[in-house]
Length: 165
Image (tube, rainbow, N blue to C red; front, side, top):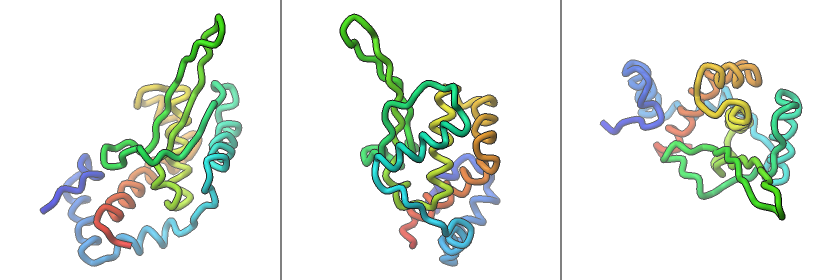
């Protein structure tokens, strides 16, 4: 039996249920029923506007974003669905800092809720660098259903990994 890499930390009974759904070819249907709504955020400029709107709504005083892009080099298999980086550059006699968010291109075609979940996750890193209690409180402040969406995203990635549509 092949391990479910996106669900490795979850109890065996949950993993067994997911395996059942995969074998019955029902996982995709369940996810489509729950998260059928797609999004229109296709380009990097649309992604920047989308993430900036979320930031303006929830984190007005956080540092400004320099760049938000889809990144095809992010390896979903290595659990990098998005990254948040602070880049410092010397400009003249000053040090200029810029914040970048990169989101895996798998989210270009993912349901709208999953794009929002990963955007919220990366925005939370503007205030909290570690995945600690404060970080997850901030995530649930921006998206009250964050934890369920994160689990369902893991199901979605498992579904994609199983090669189902």
